[in-house]
Amino acid sequence: MQEKIKQFKNEIKEKIENVGSGDMLESLRIEYVGKKGKITETLRQIGSLPIEERKTVGKELNILKKNFEEALKDKKAELSVTTKKPATDFDYTLPGLSKRIGHLHPITQTIQEISAIFVRLGFEVVAGREIETEKYNFTALNIPLDHSSRDAFDTYYTNDGNLLRSQTSTVQVRIMESRKPPLSIIAPGKVYRPDTVDANHSFMFHQIEGLMVDRSISFSDLKGILHLFLKEYFGAQSKMRFRPHFFPFTEPSVEVDVSCFKCKGKGCSTCSHQGWLEVLGAGSVDPHVFEAAGYTAHKYQGLAFGLGIERMCMLKNGIHDIRLFFENNLKFLNQF
Ligand code: PHE
Image (cartoon, rainbow, N blue to C red):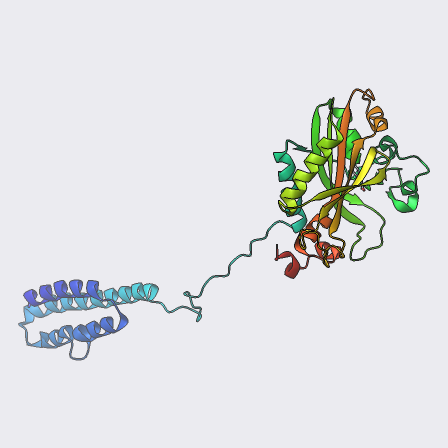
């Protein structure tokens, strides 16, 4: 009998270790402690044992039974942890939620594209201020008090007499006051004008100013730089033309047109059948501006130009309404 108990013990230990499911556990229980189980049967046979053996064998068998039942319980708990069914019907194989990755605004992209071209031509990118004084927006740029753009209704003034700059040309005198020539800079940024908003106008838009100053800078430098820029931006076949114009801070001044990149100058809806697109204002720096910056007037020569970022982006991408840039409409923005 002792031998049998020992054998049960070893068997049970090994079998419990190998149990991998609830069903296996249940059949193991039945095998030993079910109605006709091995331990149950053996317990029944105790009565036929000699009286002195009954007590010890009975005790040992009962301990074995108790330990076995406890081991079953432990195993059950262990199995329930590893094979527990999920609390919901969540499908772990479904693809996850992907995060949408943003991108730069088309205006920022255009600023970067244009800046990169001028940087390759040796220009340095500098920052200007959006809130300016009358000096940098007007007086130092040779714009007299009675000039119509100084009208209170043509510019945003703050209560303390400052204003939101109406052009990036403000950077010209600021940079010349802080540095000595030679200098060649571009300054991208926002400008503000009290324009009524429509497809081509906005109270805020972006410009890039360019300024180059040295002892001998000629009008042909201006032509060369701008033609190179326009060919880079609109395509190698682009032609350029200068039309006489007036700006108070450049003399002579020009408006610059580029041949229509769509129709190659033949005339189409992009260029209103003109064959040319007006893209920027430019000229040689007026000696009055050098004086305002504290430079000796005829010691230096310079060229300056200014262009509108929105217009450049609209022309190149066939965008017909400037308001699209500022409405945060992802259907529009995601195309860039
Ligand atoms: N500041 C001018 C404008 O806003 C553009 C310009 C810049 C013209 C520099 C000449 C030289 O229209």
